[in-house]
Image (cartoon, rainbow, N blue to C red; front, side):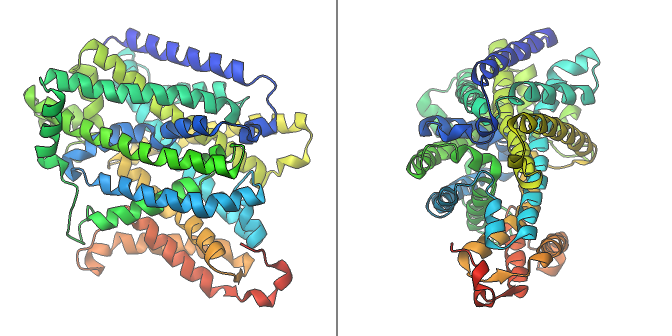
Length: 500
């Protein structure tokens, strides 16, 4: 595939996004930027959330991970359903009743200043890390497909990629993103379906034969019964449930979209329609993974013998398999479809994340509402630019140190950084106790450190047990117990108690 062709596609794609941004950001205010004037149609939010929730990590890593972990990820996706039920029935009513712009202001009302700032701080860390890893993926694909051949350094690729996001989001914020993400979700779903079609056609699979080939493949195993295995079904299911609760329900990015709906009822309708769709989309990605390796085998490719697909320390880098096949083995049309798909799904996730980081910092740390609209606009735009720079720096550091699958890296990072949010919100909702507010930040930091210590030594300390995505459960539980230790009965200060 010609680098010039790919670059032209990328330029054309972003031209469409810029046009959408110009049309939708007219007359934008701070309320437009943060919550889209609380007037977004529920069905539009539901569709836009698909692309936001998945990201390029799902597009690349979930199919790639089939090589070593089969369909064990389906248990995680099934756990998503239980997590969305909790969000829709417990968290959304709370957020709408309090009419929150930043969901972390709940912690201020419930516990106090330091609890509020701790929650917002861990969100900023979590979302900036997660978004940077997702952007790292698409920057790597563009580097492979275009910029290596042109002699452009990876750092320049990263800067240009994030600059595009800044250009189409800095003015309209969420009001613009609901439209751009709707467009990008449609592009992503079309690309996944077409990628499956092109590979099935190359393998001479009818639909029935396709289903049979995937079903009969050893890579389609879902249930793993060894409790010590990081693929153990129920461990994966529980992890999926709690990952959803924290990475959607306790995450300003995804909740910001839900809070833009006209009412609680419409927000719940959006979420409960979105839930089965997201599980089906993950099944498509897993199907794509099985087909991908069957396609490589049919073409006589020994992937583990290709140096460009190996990690620095050896072993197949499964995150590189789909990009390699799409850019070197697929037909020209299929390769174009892949490039558009990876760009669409990654930027659908990253643009809303950048807006959420800006929202949280402006509301939770700058208290932006006390300024005039003109001052708010200036602060928003400087903050937006600042977070763009932070994402660039994280990507460049991650490139130098990473040695694992990106889907594993994202969820493991989330396990450490979202644990404090899980502990704080759970304690606030499940108890009526108050906290010694000044101790909350050090307790949360210590909980993360203790979690890291246990996970690092689990094999020798816990009889060979390996932690997978359930790091989040351990971290949340440790922090919950630590918060209990620094709490006091609500009766000690009844005037400060906030009903939940």
